[in-house]
Amino acid sequence: MVLSGVESVGKTWLSMRLAALLGAEVVPEVGRSYTEALDRPLTLADHHAIAAEHARLAEAAAARQPRLLVEDTDIVMTTSWATMLFGERDPLLAAMPSRADLHLLLLPDLPFVPDPVRMFGDPASRARFHAVVEAEFAARGLEPLRIGGSLAGRETAAIAAIERRLP
Image (cartoon, rainbow, N blue to C red; front, side, top):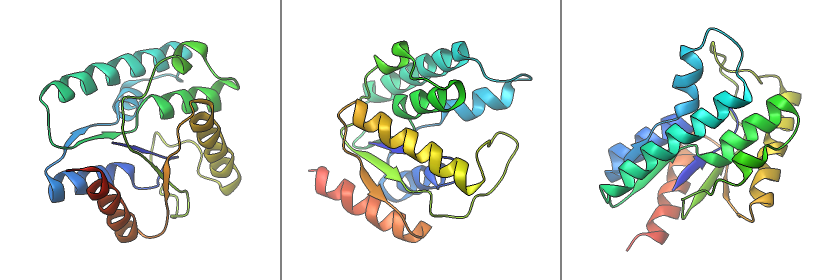
């Protein structure tokens, strides 16, 4: 499964909670660690590198055959980020498939918490970014389960969705 959503909606927190509560293996958000290591603005080539590294980590994790694999974002968000930053959907990123069986889209209804790599904290930017993410799901023909509300509520909804999918 993959957790998607704009900045500061609880993706990383929820991935760690699911790991602790359900014994999930987590593929961390590559874009964050990649961006933190840069001393310059992101380029489209950076997004290609982020996508390739995420795919490598996800493949390695899947090869270990965990009962539950949680991806803290995936190609849907990498493509959305590139669209948001550069104004158009990149065909190379758009052609890369998402491997997830379950997509949870966390809604931007939590307060924004700024940090050095977050870019879109004002309400209008968050709404615009969320619309880009929704459009990316639609372009890929994917229907995510939308989850909003408190962190505790997101956790409960995510666990229920996972339990409906797992044997």
